[in-house]
Length: 414
Image (cartoon, rainbow, N blue to C red):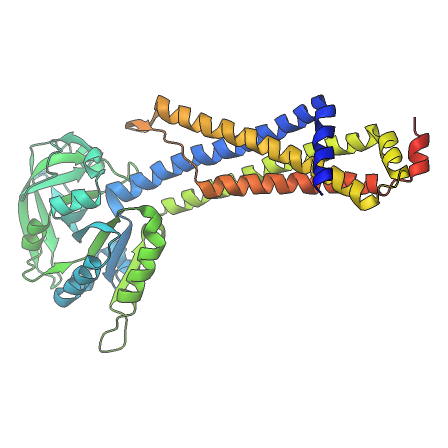
């Protein structure tokens, strides 16, 4: 086997032009795949970060059945008392949890004393909310961002601000029904204008959680959801499984589940876009690998035809067919190794250069988003192994043809 590798390496050096062209095609395929994976991964990470870090968090905990009726923002499905204490206890045991925020979600009527419209509100504790959704303040288009908001202040969505002609500093009134059906109103001062994360049709505003308790006449501890931020989003599957085991399995006296745990993926429709990026990446890999396959197969077939006399000679002096087969397969293998080694080096250097130059771009109203391409060791190893395997597979048919060639016929070939 060692001699076959030596002979295959010599053959590659003998036919330098062919070896160079084939290696360049493999290198181009590897560079294209790795750079596409790194750049598309960066776009995906930015998109996921905008969703999780400015609104949702990575994981959310609700009372069982809340999400099924979330469109009506039901107050009778809020977490209360001991349920909240249990959630806090479980989260304290999770080292992967960086922060969490208690929220009350409610619907209300919004009035500027001239016109009235409906609004959806997230009532939060500002300090906890900023830790859980650190990009939230970047959604504030107008108004002071420091500290998010104080009791008596409200952040209103851009849609309502434009439609109702409300500006920062204006006074407004909110009217809401509590869970018993009674109505209560409360005055607020507009602290800022909030960009809708779901697009121009967003109607979600924000108030302080103490104001929500007063407006809804909530005396005891009560929240609609607990939003959780993890130290590393890659820990999401493990943390979700742990929370599901500790909270999802708990049942009430009637034998019904008490809690429901959801990742951002099951809550946000943007996860479908993330899946489309993954699917597109997969098909691009297939296309580029197919190019490598066809390129190597074509070169190896031409190598067999160009070296018919050589094959006949080594066969006539007693070289066994399996040795000839191995020789051509090893040549394909070595070209795959050479091409992937050079391609991987070029890709990693290119990624480092892109990160060093800090390429930025604008997306909608968000400016200066930094492109940070990165690629994991697993992705690099997978691409390298696949390309080398394809190079070997592409060499099999030409190698088989060479191994089965009749020596006399080969020696007569001109």
